Structure formats: C-alpha cells, structure tokens
Image (cartoon, rainbow, N blue to C red; front, side, top):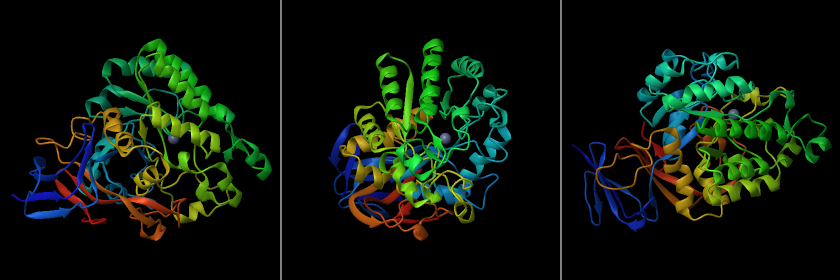
Length: 425
Ligand SMILES: [Zn+2]
C-alpha cells in the first residue's frame, strides 16, 4: 500500500486554517501533522490544502456531441481546475431522462477516473416541458439533482407537480430561469449596449419572472429548489428575501457572470455569447455582494464546450456557452474580494451539500475522511492560453487574461490525478 503525503501547505476547510502535512492511504486521510513522510511526496509549499471543489453545473457533451467534449476530456479539465466532483447537465443526446443514460454517464466518469461524475436527471422527458421524467426510478439510480437546463420549465402547473413529486423523494429540482416567450431570438442582454449594437435582447425580466414564480411555488409546497446561473441584481435580491423568509432555496453564480459585462459583445465575437447573457456592471456588483453575504451558495461554471466551427458562426447562429472548469478558481481568487475561506466554501463544501455528496466531497481535512482534495497556490500568476487547456474545445472568453491562483495538485479518491499542474492520466 502506498502512502501519499502532501507537505508544507496550509490546510483550510470549514473548521478554519492551520499549517500541516496530510498523509493519505487507501483513499482516506490517515494523518494530519508536521514532519510526515511517505512513499510519494507532493510539495505544497506556499499552497492551501482544501477539500476538493464541486461543480454543480457542467456540460460534458457525451453522449451526443463528442466532437466538443467527452466525459474523459471534461473530467480532465475538472481535475485540473481542482474539482473532485461535477454534476453533468442532462442536455445530452439522448437526454438524461432514463436510468440507462444516467448509468452510461456515471460509468464513463468512472472509466476516466479523474473526478466523480454525477449525472443529473431531466425534469421533463426529453427536456420538452410536457411530461415529467421518471423521478422515482432516477432517484433510485442515485440521481439527486433534476433540471431541464438549457430550458426553463415554462408551465407553472407542471412545475408545481414536479415539486410535489420531488418532495417525498428527497431530490432537488434545479431551474434554468428563463421565460421563453420573452427571449425569442435573443443574442445578448437587453440594455443600452444591445440597442447600440442593434442585436435582439434577453431581458433581465425573463429570468426574474420565473425565479419569482418558483420561489412562490417553494413557499406553497415547502419543497427545496436550486436556481442555476443567476445573472441579475434583482434575482439576487429575490433569493435574499426568500432566504430571509426561511424558504429552502439555494442559488449559484458563474465566474463569467461576475467578471464580464455585455460590453464584451462590442466585438461581435460569439465567444461572449452565453445563456443567460453577460449583463451589466451593476449586476456583477450584486452577484459579488450575494456571494459575500451568503445569498449565493455556490460558484458553478456552466462549463459549455463548443467545437470551434460552431463558435465561428455569426452571433445569431452561434450556440451559447463558454468553458469554465480550468479557470474558475483563478477567477474567483482574482476577482472576488473575499477571504479565501469564503471562496473555498462556495467552490467546495456548500455545493457538495446541494449536490447531495456531502458524505464524500467537501469534507473537512481530517483523519478518517475520504481524500478528495485540491492543493492550490493562491499567489501563482498565469496567463490563460486556450491551446493549453485540457478541454476538447477552445471557447474560453479569457484568452490572454492574467489571473492569480493555480491548482497545483488534485487528489481524487486518494489518487493524485493532477501533480504539479499536470494531469497524471
Ligand atoms: Zn442553463
């Protein structure tokens, strides 16, 4: 049995911060202390040893669009980003609305062996918004998060039934908030920038109306709900009030929504097209305030790879979405004015709880716990270079940007899957 030791770092988790080496055997942490030795030593000088990150929102494109990403390449990008678990969105082809498809996704994740791939399930069959997916069967197969991501569930009566069905099963419904009737043909945020460029707009209201409706459905049913990729200042305020009312709601924000504004579309470059769209400086400030005061529970990437030829199409034809896994920690570390403990909370243990994997991810770094860890250097500056990313696609909006904070090692199930910034498999 080999013993891996992470030496010279500072452990930071939900119970605080302390210097210490971490020894791992057989998938678990067996010792935390000073002067530890082992068969394999990973240097963590100047680094933070954190519980591994959990991404509630990734598109791995398999099955169906393997030219953009596979579960293996997406898992590698995740590991390089410090993630030990990712929730795979269900807008695959076929969609993740049956036990056969979710089992396939989970198996491909196991085969890659770089992080835990947690398949989500659809709320409606085929994500068509007509009939509910078989929640009971999917829950029995281990699915915890259900969403039609890419689409919001438009019918309020169907959404009410979905919550009533979900409640006794203990599963969580996650909404992509978008009233489709308000966003037909939309390319970017509806605002002054959009009218100047003459492009069709995606109004903030389209997100806020569905969010308001669903908060009221949570109030009616008492069933928990998670809100995906919130992007507007009023959305943050709606969630803040819902939480003040004691409602069981959680929410996530993406790095692109707290770092980029709609003005990026001045370039007409489809790399900046995303759904929901990039918004305004005031929305960025509100998202940051929401992350700071606990209104927003998690940073999720909405990692959305697209093959190059599709993103080279004109704005109105190019698909929305951008890469996120390999830059998330650096952007949070660089752009959020938060103590590192808060950054780690929204990247690790808080999303682990929402994903239903708090028994094995986002655990405190202590003896007996599963060894799912990220070792990060918070002061390491680097330049984002699309060609150096592990994702199969290149659609990052951060090409050439200098960021601070890099993942040095990632330990998944006790195995070093990233060592010195390189994937080991
Ligand atoms: Zn979405």
